[in-house]
Amino acid sequence: MAFLSSIHSLEIPMSLRPTLEFLLYDWLHAEQLTARTRFADHSRETFDAVLDTCERIAREKYAPFNRTVDIEEPRFDGKKVILPKATHEAFKAFAQSGMLSAAQDYEIGGMQLPYTVEAAAQCFFAMASVSIGSGMLTVGNANLLRVHGTTAQQAVFALNEFSGRWAGTMALSEPQAGSSLSDISTRAVADGADFEADPLGPRYRLTGNKMWISAGEHELTENIIHLVLAKIPGPDGKLIAGTRGISLFIVPKMMVDREGQLTGERNDVALAGLNHKLGWRGTTNTLLNFGEGKFPVRGKAGAVGYLVGRPHEGLRCMFHMMNEARIGVGTAAVMLGMAGYYAALEYARNRPQGRLPVGQKSEHGSSAVGKDPAQPQVRIIEHADVKRMLLAQKSYCEGGLALELYCARLVDEQNTGEPEAADDARLLLEVLTPIAKSWPSEWCLEANSLAIQVHGGYGYTRDFPVEQYWRDNRLNMIHEGTHGIQAADLLGRKVLMEGGKGLSLLGKRIAATIERASGHPVLAEYASELRPALEQVQSATQAAWSTGNPAEALANAVPYMQAFGHMVVAWIWLDVALAVPPEAAATDPAQQGRLHATRYFYRYELPKIGAWLDVAARRDPTCAQMPEAAF
Image (cartoon, rainbow, N blue to C red):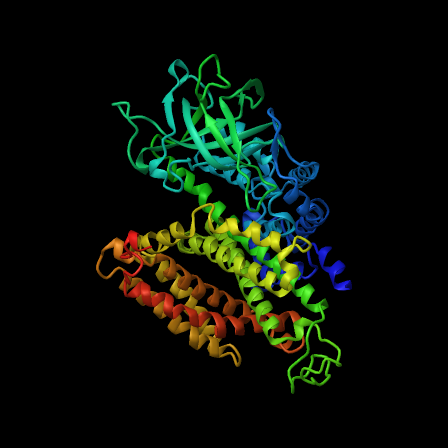
């Protein structure tokens, strides 16, 4: 049973780093970013040093404790939330690395690191232990304030989050509203004489409840900064209906002064309960009560909140954090899928079982002898169906990783490129963000399911890590906008915005890859298959909206998004394959793997889009017209 012990100790495979480096340097040419003023102090060496540091911390402080945080869930002792010691040490190491402010200006303690490199470095933590976390919400919270906050709000709140002194959350959902933000009922009223007097911004008192708040209560930092969506009542005292009434507020757990020092007074924010989850058990997930009077500030009930931006523009501001988080969720889904893939690969290489069919030769040259039980067993990786499952996982996960890094590269282009290139990057990100979030959360979850299947019965036990990877990954189709929300956003808004300019621009990028691949001796076949797939997506988009009826167009938004995502990942794989040096294609196993994964995706996955697009193009009413009683 030697294969058992070798698998259970699996952490971060050595092959992850070369995969990241190929995508960063050989495909995305991240080194070219150093020619830009903002990144002029950097080089391949400094990028590699960041990867070295993050890989080391992930191996030492995260990976060994992934099972620990899954078993030792957060608990509330009546005064505070208790987390394992390992979580405290991991967060401390991450904060001390400087990665919370990696992309920020030197002047505020940042590294001015390209987001492309930061995103690659974050992959180590997501693979090692996604539920310990690496500050995604804290960084997103602070980044939002850097764009929409006042100078004082940035200095007091954002800078303390970037340093790791304080943590941040986003508080959107409510128990009665779920994902329907137009139905939130948390109320914010001007705080009397303190309304305009507070140097940290217009001051309000908030009352209401927020649900599903990740990291909403813990002792990892001395303060937690909640970004809270709430509604300011109209002149009649009633809340404004719909999303146009939503404003955004900074609500600290502990009150602070204008210098960023704690006053010693607790804000009126109380933990109402911990949610006990299927996965991501190392991260606290909370129900918070705002303004219930448990911790009155200056003798008054109501949580003190500082307005961010202008009244009634809160959702617009919050989308800055939400879109950033969606790419982060996609990356987490990819790395969980990748962790399962590497575990399944190692298991398949070590697990002997069965014999090859008559006429099939093993990879070591021995002839198969059919089902003769007297012959030695082969390792399961030699069975064609196991190879199919492994190749599917590889195509989903490495394709998804390339997609996320491509989106990260677009962020750098939007922030530092020439005006036309920056605007193109903005439009491409608008179209690709729903895909970057949704596609990996569906298909890398499928990769985790296949990893369990490769393990067989062992995969369904807690003796192997693949069941935890699946449990952790199942959340990613839900949080930061469910599959249905992402699909409605894609088909209902993103492909139509600015006269369809973003979709047209994406089509041109794909067409350019097709043109480059058309003359390639191996890849020309795939180019000829991608072209009609792109045309199918474009045609289905027009057909879905041909009646101008949103109810008809969006009835099959999810199948449309599945097809769109498959088309995008097929393009990504073809573009990645073009970066494989011809001389390495026949001799380098890693490059052979990329070409085989491309071949698999085109032969097994891309053909699926026809059925998905058919129901979208025909505006098929089957689901919408199903009578409730008939269920």
